Length: 244
Image (cartoon, rainbow, N blue to C red):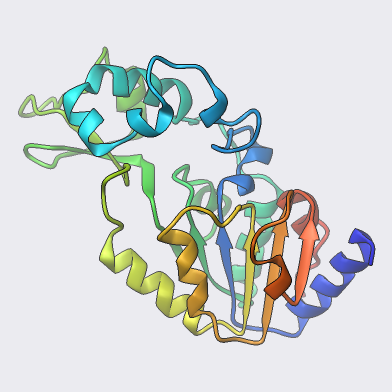
Protein backbone atom coordinates (compact mmCIF):
# COMPACT_ATOMS: atom_id res chain seq x y z
CA UNK A 1 0.00 0.00 0.00
CA UNK A 2 1.39 3.43 -0.92
CA UNK A 3 1.57 6.28 1.60
CA UNK A 4 -1.12 8.06 -0.40
CA UNK A 5 -3.42 5.07 0.05
CA UNK A 6 -2.50 4.87 3.74
CA UNK A 7 -3.38 8.55 4.23
CA UNK A 8 -6.73 7.82 2.60
CA UNK A 9 -7.25 5.01 5.13
CA UNK A 10 -6.25 7.36 7.94
CA UNK A 11 -8.88 9.83 6.73
CA UNK A 12 -11.53 7.10 6.93
CA UNK A 13 -10.42 6.16 10.45
CA UNK A 14 -10.56 9.77 11.64
CA UNK A 15 -13.96 10.28 9.98
CA UNK A 16 -15.42 7.26 11.77
CA UNK A 17 -14.14 7.91 15.31
CA UNK A 18 -15.08 10.58 17.83
CA UNK A 19 -12.82 9.88 20.80
CA UNK A 20 -9.36 10.15 19.28
CA UNK A 21 -6.26 10.67 21.43
CA UNK A 22 -2.92 11.69 20.00
CA UNK A 23 0.34 10.53 21.61
CA UNK A 24 3.37 12.39 20.27
CA UNK A 25 7.11 12.79 20.63
CA UNK A 26 10.00 14.90 19.38
CA UNK A 27 9.26 14.16 15.73
CA UNK A 28 6.11 16.27 15.97
CA UNK A 29 8.24 19.39 16.45
CA UNK A 30 11.16 18.71 14.11
CA UNK A 31 9.12 20.22 11.27
CA UNK A 32 9.01 23.41 13.38
CA UNK A 33 12.80 23.47 13.44
CA UNK A 34 13.29 21.94 16.90
CA UNK A 35 15.91 19.13 16.85
CA UNK A 36 14.98 15.77 18.30
CA UNK A 37 17.29 13.75 20.51
CA UNK A 38 18.08 10.55 18.68
CA UNK A 39 18.28 11.23 14.94
CA UNK A 40 21.65 11.70 13.26
CA UNK A 41 21.32 15.47 13.63
CA UNK A 42 19.72 15.25 17.07
CA UNK A 43 20.98 16.58 20.38
CA UNK A 44 22.59 13.28 21.38
CA UNK A 45 24.93 13.54 18.38
CA UNK A 46 26.20 17.04 19.22
CA UNK A 47 29.58 17.49 20.89
CA UNK A 48 29.60 18.92 24.38
CA UNK A 49 31.93 18.62 27.34
CA UNK A 50 29.36 16.29 28.94
CA UNK A 51 26.80 13.96 27.31
CA UNK A 52 23.38 15.68 26.95
CA UNK A 53 21.68 13.07 29.12
CA UNK A 54 24.14 13.95 31.90
CA UNK A 55 23.66 17.71 31.51
CA UNK A 56 19.86 17.53 31.68
CA UNK A 57 19.81 15.39 34.80
CA UNK A 58 18.57 16.40 38.25
CA UNK A 59 21.94 15.93 39.94
CA UNK A 60 23.84 17.86 37.25
CA UNK A 61 21.39 20.77 37.51
CA UNK A 62 22.15 21.17 41.20
CA UNK A 63 25.88 20.43 40.98
CA UNK A 64 26.71 22.43 37.84
CA UNK A 65 23.85 24.85 37.12
CA UNK A 66 25.98 27.20 35.03
CA UNK A 67 26.89 24.46 32.55
CA UNK A 68 23.29 23.18 32.66
CA UNK A 69 21.91 26.58 31.68
CA UNK A 70 24.54 27.12 29.00
CA UNK A 71 23.32 23.95 27.25
CA UNK A 72 19.65 24.52 28.12
CA UNK A 73 19.50 28.05 26.69
CA UNK A 74 21.47 27.01 23.61
CA UNK A 75 19.65 23.80 22.72
CA UNK A 76 16.35 23.45 24.58
CA UNK A 77 14.74 26.88 24.43
CA UNK A 78 13.01 27.37 21.08
CA UNK A 79 10.94 30.47 21.70
CA UNK A 80 10.79 31.47 18.03
CA UNK A 81 9.44 28.08 16.89
CA UNK A 82 5.95 28.07 15.39
CA UNK A 83 3.34 25.28 15.22
CA UNK A 84 3.50 23.18 12.07
CA UNK A 85 0.77 21.38 10.14
CA UNK A 86 0.59 18.57 12.71
CA UNK A 87 0.02 20.87 15.69
CA UNK A 88 -2.57 22.87 13.76
CA UNK A 89 -4.51 19.84 12.52
CA UNK A 90 -4.70 18.34 16.01
CA UNK A 91 -6.09 21.63 17.33
CA UNK A 92 -8.68 21.61 14.53
CA UNK A 93 -9.70 18.06 15.39
CA UNK A 94 -10.18 19.01 19.04
CA UNK A 95 -12.27 22.05 18.10
CA UNK A 96 -14.41 19.82 15.87
CA UNK A 97 -15.08 17.46 18.80
CA UNK A 98 -13.11 14.59 17.26
CA UNK A 99 -9.99 14.65 19.46
CA UNK A 100 -10.25 14.20 23.22
CA UNK A 101 -6.65 14.95 24.19
CA UNK A 102 -3.03 15.32 23.19
CA UNK A 103 -0.45 13.43 25.24
CA UNK A 104 3.00 14.81 24.46
CA UNK A 105 6.57 14.08 25.44
CA UNK A 106 7.59 17.52 24.13
CA UNK A 107 8.34 20.53 26.30
CA UNK A 108 7.94 23.32 23.72
CA UNK A 109 4.31 24.33 24.25
CA UNK A 110 3.58 24.28 20.50
CA UNK A 111 0.36 22.27 20.86
CA UNK A 112 -1.12 25.00 23.05
CA UNK A 113 0.25 27.70 20.76
CA UNK A 114 -1.64 26.03 17.89
CA UNK A 115 -4.87 26.09 19.89
CA UNK A 116 -5.03 22.68 21.60
CA UNK A 117 -6.63 22.97 25.03
CA UNK A 118 -6.45 19.51 26.59
CA UNK A 119 -2.75 18.70 26.55
CA UNK A 120 -0.95 16.36 28.95
CA UNK A 121 2.72 17.37 29.01
CA UNK A 122 4.48 14.28 30.32
CA UNK A 123 7.87 15.97 30.54
CA UNK A 124 6.73 19.45 31.55
CA UNK A 125 7.30 22.70 29.67
CA UNK A 126 10.10 25.20 29.07
CA UNK A 127 7.45 27.93 29.22
CA UNK A 128 7.04 27.47 32.98
CA UNK A 129 9.86 28.16 35.44
CA UNK A 130 9.82 28.46 39.22
CA UNK A 131 12.10 29.72 41.96
CA UNK A 132 13.41 26.72 43.91
CA UNK A 133 13.13 28.71 47.14
CA UNK A 134 9.92 30.78 47.06
CA UNK A 135 8.25 29.17 44.00
CA UNK A 136 7.65 32.45 42.16
CA UNK A 137 6.76 31.88 38.48
CA UNK A 138 8.93 33.07 35.59
CA UNK A 139 8.34 32.79 31.86
CA UNK A 140 10.82 31.42 29.34
CA UNK A 141 11.93 34.87 28.23
CA UNK A 142 13.19 35.58 31.75
CA UNK A 143 15.36 32.44 31.56
CA UNK A 144 16.64 33.23 28.09
CA UNK A 145 17.76 36.75 28.94
CA UNK A 146 19.16 36.04 32.39
CA UNK A 147 22.91 36.40 32.81
CA UNK A 148 24.37 32.99 33.62
CA UNK A 149 22.25 31.16 36.19
CA UNK A 150 18.71 32.63 36.40
CA UNK A 151 17.86 33.74 39.93
CA UNK A 152 14.63 34.92 41.49
CA UNK A 153 14.13 38.69 41.50
CA UNK A 154 12.18 38.36 44.76
CA UNK A 155 14.32 36.14 47.00
CA UNK A 156 17.50 35.38 45.04
CA UNK A 157 16.84 31.64 44.81
CA UNK A 158 17.85 29.67 41.74
CA UNK A 159 15.12 29.32 39.11
CA UNK A 160 14.43 25.86 37.67
CA UNK A 161 12.52 25.01 34.48
CA UNK A 162 9.31 23.03 35.01
CA UNK A 163 10.67 20.18 32.91
CA UNK A 164 11.22 16.58 33.98
CA UNK A 165 14.96 16.02 34.09
CA UNK A 166 16.67 12.64 34.08
CA UNK A 167 16.49 11.10 37.58
CA UNK A 168 13.14 12.84 38.21
CA UNK A 169 9.73 11.18 38.21
CA UNK A 170 6.79 12.17 36.06
CA UNK A 171 3.99 14.20 37.62
CA UNK A 172 1.35 11.79 38.94
CA UNK A 173 -1.61 14.04 38.04
CA UNK A 174 -0.37 14.35 34.45
CA UNK A 175 0.18 10.59 34.19
CA UNK A 176 -3.27 9.82 35.59
CA UNK A 177 -4.92 12.25 33.19
CA UNK A 178 -3.02 10.84 30.21
CA UNK A 179 -3.84 7.25 31.17
CA UNK A 180 -7.54 8.08 31.55
CA UNK A 181 -7.59 9.77 28.14
CA UNK A 182 -5.80 6.88 26.41
CA UNK A 183 -7.98 4.32 28.15
CA UNK A 184 -11.14 6.13 27.02
CA UNK A 185 -10.06 6.58 23.39
CA UNK A 186 -11.67 4.70 20.52
CA UNK A 187 -8.67 5.60 18.30
CA UNK A 188 -5.08 6.23 19.36
CA UNK A 189 -2.79 8.00 16.90
CA UNK A 190 0.90 7.79 17.82
CA UNK A 191 3.15 10.19 15.93
CA UNK A 192 6.71 11.44 15.80
CA UNK A 193 8.10 9.13 18.44
CA UNK A 194 10.45 6.16 18.40
CA UNK A 195 8.67 4.77 21.48
CA UNK A 196 11.92 4.09 23.33
CA UNK A 197 11.58 6.62 26.17
CA UNK A 198 10.05 5.03 29.27
CA UNK A 199 7.94 5.34 31.30
CA UNK A 200 6.20 7.64 28.79
CA UNK A 201 6.06 5.08 25.96
CA UNK A 202 4.50 2.51 28.29
CA UNK A 203 1.35 4.62 28.61
CA UNK A 204 0.12 3.45 25.21
CA UNK A 205 -0.37 -0.02 26.72
CA UNK A 206 -3.50 1.34 28.38
CA UNK A 207 -5.22 1.71 25.00
CA UNK A 208 -8.16 -0.68 24.59
CA UNK A 209 -9.95 1.03 21.73
CA UNK A 210 -10.73 0.20 18.13
CA UNK A 211 -7.90 1.56 15.95
CA UNK A 212 -4.18 2.05 16.62
CA UNK A 213 -2.33 4.27 14.12
CA UNK A 214 1.43 4.85 14.01
CA UNK A 215 3.00 7.72 12.04
CA UNK A 216 6.77 8.13 12.20
CA UNK A 217 9.67 8.75 9.84
CA UNK A 218 11.26 5.41 10.79
CA UNK A 219 9.85 2.08 11.91
CA UNK A 220 9.06 1.49 15.59
CA UNK A 221 8.79 -1.64 17.71
CA UNK A 222 5.00 -1.27 17.73
CA UNK A 223 4.41 -1.08 13.95
CA UNK A 224 3.38 -4.72 13.73
CA UNK A 225 0.67 -4.17 16.34
CA UNK A 226 -0.83 -1.15 14.58
CA UNK A 227 -3.93 -1.22 12.38
CA UNK A 228 -2.17 1.36 10.21
CA UNK A 229 1.52 2.37 10.11
CA UNK A 230 2.73 5.26 7.96
CA UNK A 231 6.44 6.01 7.50
CA UNK A 232 6.51 9.75 6.83
CA UNK A 233 6.84 13.09 8.65
CA UNK A 234 3.83 13.63 10.89
CA UNK A 235 3.11 17.17 9.64
CA UNK A 236 3.20 16.00 6.04
CA UNK A 237 0.63 13.31 6.84
CA UNK A 238 -1.77 15.21 9.10
CA UNK A 239 -1.58 18.24 6.83
CA UNK A 240 -3.50 16.23 4.22
CA UNK A 241 -6.32 15.26 6.59
CA UNK A 242 -9.67 17.01 6.23
CA UNK A 243 -11.61 17.83 9.40
CA UNK A 244 -15.30 17.14 8.91
